[in-house]
Amino acid sequence: MFTRLMENTLQKFANFPVIAILGPRQSGKTTLAQKAYPDHAFVSLENPILREFALKEPAQFLESYANKNGLIIDEFQYVPQILSYIQLDVDAKKRKSFFILTGSQNFLVNQAITQSLAGRVGILNLQPLSLRELAQNNLLPKSPAKTVFNGFYPRLYNEQFTPEQLYPSYIQTYIERDVRQIINVGDLGTFQKFLQLCASRIGNLLNLSDLAMVCGISVTTARRWLSLLEASYIIFLLEPYFNNFSKRLTKMPKLYFYDTGLACSLLRISSPEALALHPFWGSLFECCIIADIAKQYFNQGSRPPFYFWRDKNGRLEVDCLIDEAGMLFPIEVKASERISNDFFTGLSEWNRLAYGENPQKDPAAQTYLLYAGNEKQIRTQAQVVPWTEAGSLVTEITRSGKRK
Image (tube, rainbow, N blue to C red):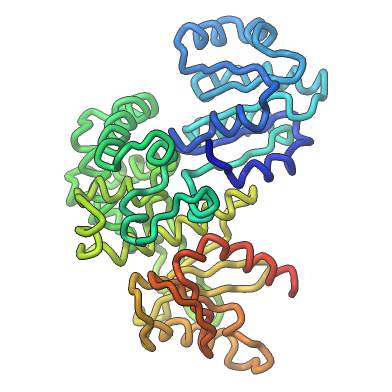
C-alpha cells in the first residue's frame, strides 16, 4: 500500500462534517479513504443492489450502514440525491469527519455538492501518483522516458500491470461506462477518435474548430466532449496569462492530460525507447511536469494557480507561470538531458518585461528551468532543476511566497 501525500492534508480538513475525495477512476480514492478512516463503515454505490436501496430509501440507507465513527460512501455520484439526507444529518448532529465521500465525475459531483452541502464539505482532488510519491515509495524509474511512458496509476505499481495491459482496458471501460452514463454519445468510436486527437495536441493551443473538423463533429459537440474529459479528470486546460506589460496573444488555452501513460497509449507509443525518439517526446515530458505541478497543489488541498505566457508577437513562451501569494514564478520545461543557453530565452524575456524597471528584484531566485537531466545548477537566468526533483517544486515555491 502506498503512502499518499494527501493523508496529511486530510487532517487539515478534519473539522468538516463531510469530506469529499474526488478524482479519476483508479487513482486510489477508496484506498486512501479506508486507510485514513479505518474505523468508518464502508459502502460502495457501484453495487446495484445497494444503489437501489439508497435511491428508494436514503434515510434508512444511511442509518443502516453508518456506525458510531462514520461512513465512507464510495462513488456517491450514482445517487446524488443522498446528499440532501446527509445535509439533514450533518445539521442535526454536527459530527466532524463523519461522512467521507468519493466520486469520479466532477461536474455531477460538484453540482450536487453545491446544491446540498455548501459550507459543510471539504473537497479534495486525488490524482494518480505524483513524482514525489513515486520517489518516496521507491518506485520512481531512473529514466524520464520510462516514467512518462508508464504513467502514474497506482495499479501499475501495486498489481504489476504493464502499461500495455492497463491503459487500453482503462480507456475502453471509461468510454463504455462513464461516457455512456453522463452524456448520450451515439458513436463511441468517434468519441475514442476525439480522445486520440486530444492526445495528439498535448501542450498545444486548443483550436476547437480544427479539432471538431478533423474528428468530423460539430464545434458544439467538440466543446461538450471536451467538458466531459475535463469533468472526468482525463484532461485539463492551462489558461494564458496576461497583464499590462504584455497584451494577451490568444484566448486559447493549452491542452494537457493528467496522466502521460494514458496519453502514450492513445498515441500508440509502444515502449520507453520508442517514446524517447518520438516527435511527441518533448510535449509528453512537458505534460508530465505540468500535470505534476497540478498534483502537488491538489495534494496540499488547493487548486493550482498556474498559467502559461507568450509574448505579444507569439515568438517567445514560458511553459508555466505559478502565481503564489502575489509572486510570479516562471518555469520552463525542456525534454533534454543537456542544458543549452537558448533554453533561457523565454525566461529572460519574461523577467526583462516583468522586472526591467525594478533592479532591486532578483528574478533568477524565483525562475526555474526543469529538464530531463540529473544535475542541479544555479545560473544567472534561473535555477536549473533535474526532473527527479521536480516533485518538490511547489513546496519550494510556496515557501518563497510566504517569505515575501
